[in-house]
Length: 433
Image: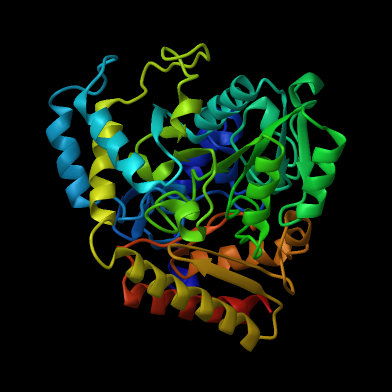
């Protein structure tokens, strides 16, 4: 799509109206385009690798509803399964066999999970797992890493990356100091800082929670030995290791980051893909820990829509598709070709860049590398990224409207889509150089 063909009148009308109805005109902050400028594109429909807006523009989409659409938007097999179950009802508020089926699939796939509880969002899963960490260990303090995002619960909104970084907020008003007093912060990829925190807080740390591969401060991978070191440190201190795999679960491998790297945490949070595009979250882990959760144990957590038949059905069908032979090999090939094309295009115009990918997840920073933590990620040229984002929109490519978000590919992206995208990057880098 050339610059002259991008139409935005209807999007502008709708977003202007939305600003009078909803805070900032959106229901999730990063959608407002605050960090990239201009008004957001208002989507009308999605299919496969594409999104169409209300002005009729078509975009090759690399956010995939922020991760769930790994089989492509509105996958026909997922839609067909949803049609079938829709006739039975949208929510039961009672047990159904679909919960069993998806639970078995998750337990079979994710190495750490022996028992699982479904909830309705990644934030809800992380809130519950934090309560469970404290209940099981009898300790209150936790360690999280700068730039890792675990939802918008009070105790996690400290150096939280993602939308918080995009908006330039160090945390959030309305969060009492008491809520974050027991949240301890370490730089990602720095084992020494973690060791020092444990030394200063002996027998008071419930555990560590992290994104094993960071996607909410841009795409940052663990350095060799980092995840292994965290496993050793937590074991030595009788603390729990929690992988927040809401983003990486079933995306960088069928068993998530823990299967990819061979590091088994005590607990895991999941979301996005396991709901096939419907609202869902989950937390699970060792059976002895999960027995603390009500009604099996004393730690209370509940949810009216948890395990609803629509989300369970979409998740089941999505995981069935992902289990097919060659799925992750295909995702690895197209994503590697994409990121290599992006890096080559930037370097051809003498723009500083660093980036990488794993399976169906990728990212880049407009700065010299390496980027191993959030502090280094903040060196990325966000103003140049804003210009790049607009230039790519004008060429029919939809990227996350933030320099601090990972990108996602899907099984629906074709070789031609990747070729078109790389060409668009070449033209866009030349335009902003």
